Length: 560
Image 1 (tube, one colour):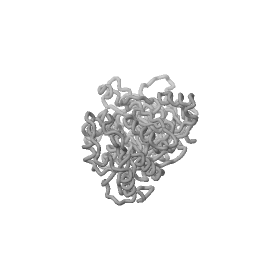
Image 2 (image 1 turned 90 degrees about the vertical axis):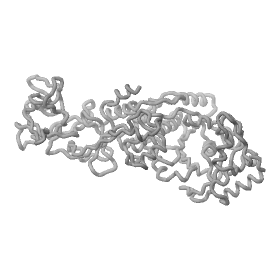
Image 3 (image 1 turned 180 degrees about the horizontal axis):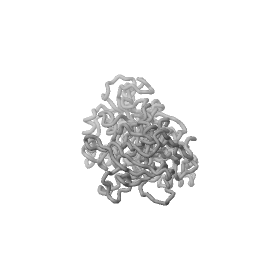
Image 4 (image 1 turned 135 degrees about the vertical axis):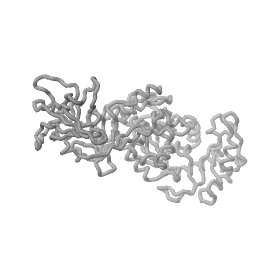
């Protein structure tokens, strides 16, 4: 089920859903496992959907089954083909390929005929109550509902009215088709739920052919049955809807009766996965779009530099359970750190440059310094980095009056330049405001490669780039979008946006090799973090995927 461009897709750990499927196969209840991933095309997929994708496609893969991608497109006012194409891209990027591509709209005529079947069985009726009246008649969790005055309308009248609804004779909201179940049921979902509503809305696939549209709960179960789904996997919020799922299928002449199984949805700290709130972030310009690298959307994670393997690994690590719980953001971040640590090439980049002049280095000399592409993987080879009289180092790597345990550059102290030489700071140059603008250093020519022939040791190693050869770049330092661990559980999630979620650094100095980096090239800026070249601009811009270490560990501990 994985695509060819994925080098390795491991089998997921066992869980209660996999145990059910194993038992069903062992008992010969099913000979072929059929699942589906059924998103509504009303927005971009997020990390929560990734869990469902990995579960549905992973189960099909590991049990030699099939998994359909089905768009539940029954709400045309909020749906768009843009989202359809984005979802297909995201599923494939994660490493999966569907057995068949389906749409709920493929079944509109069959759904309509099944509704007629329910009416003929006197198990559905056309109701004229408006939305407010329906809420009033429905009752509460502690009080039973009341039957609609239209509940006992004759079958003939219901068939006539439903046909006229289909013909477009009535205004939006004037009538709706409801199931006739039990207005006293302790499960409110079973109190004569709506099956069809009148809505004159242009559909991205069927155009204006239908002035009525089926409701999700009615459509979903029948679509599953028509596709011969064996196990309909959904999140826990649908557990109370399962009796309706089963009721609809029990009344109809469908080819099979899938088993609905619920699992805990993904709740990730320091983020939200509500489509409504994500849309608010985009529409109110709190972020730059659905693919903003701070967004938990798959397209945002991709642009930030998360890899398909890291997201699949994350979904495997958090597992599949029946109990909702919050997952630490550090789990997701560690997954991408571990993946990139294996594959990302190492380069040097100075994000806050401080000029260094090596006074005893020949003025016109340029050396090619050999640097490992990955210190732990010699098979990945090496590259050459130009070295000259003037270089840049990180401003934080120098301290004029340094404490004893500061092992980087300071007046009179020696430090190792990564792959190059030992240098000693001899003087500083300041501007009229007293700010340090340049360091004067000397170097030891005998220490090329970073070792001293006389055996002296230095504790500090810093990275650098040649001033003459460095390329200028903009670097976006992305961090968690929210400063609160549960922004969705607060009164106003916008009040908890992290003001430090993005810092834009201009004038950064990078190794010249990065000037030719293709879009989406991932690398480790040594001593800084993992970065990826931004795919949305031709300018040299790098986005931070994740720092080398968890900078939020203490905050998370304090909030525990």
